[in-house]
Image (cartoon, rainbow, N blue to C red):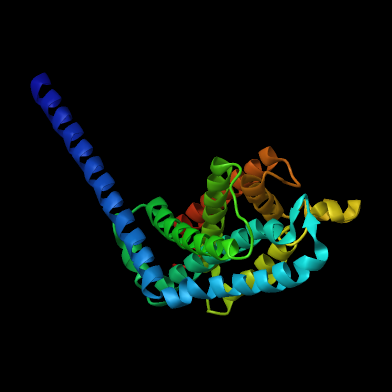
Length: 279
């Protein structure tokens, strides 16, 4: 074989590889947009179940803790108590709904076996994860925005640091969306997808500074509270809205970013291994 023939074949092989790579990128982009559209349509199709109930629940929180109990408490950290708890309640709704959206949707895919169609398609696991995570973030933002509207009916809401507010809610929603996907990977029954929200998320959220400032706690319990990652998310969001926080904003971003990265990598590893999917 002459040098010209070898050069031609090498050039042809390189061209074919480039075309294949371009095709894979296009396929993954189409797959990503399809998963996101499916998730968003699912949220909007059953909006009576996905968006309205959290808003009603948060309205009751504002009535009970804000209007009734808040009058007796007065101010906290220099603002009315209803204003103080508003960022925490918004963040609580973002956490629970971003987690719940992904865990229920991904587990339903496992149960109904249409998840296998995505796994055998030429889609990377990263594409699948990002698609579900974006869906969880969308639901978290929709519910969080609605709860903010509800909060405006009970107190004055303002945003002191818009960039901090936006990045905090995106990182938090992304983190718990990935956590919901990991929960769904391990879940074998519908009972399994309710264990983490009931016995982990709910206690951590209530102890995460939603209804109180950690300055009210004793030194020992302050140390315990600072081991709760949700405390940093709630306080970073409260700082973005009210300009006050019980924790360092730098530490809050480090914990939020580190948690998201660690959980994302874990989700990739689990899907690559076929954990909870291959039988």
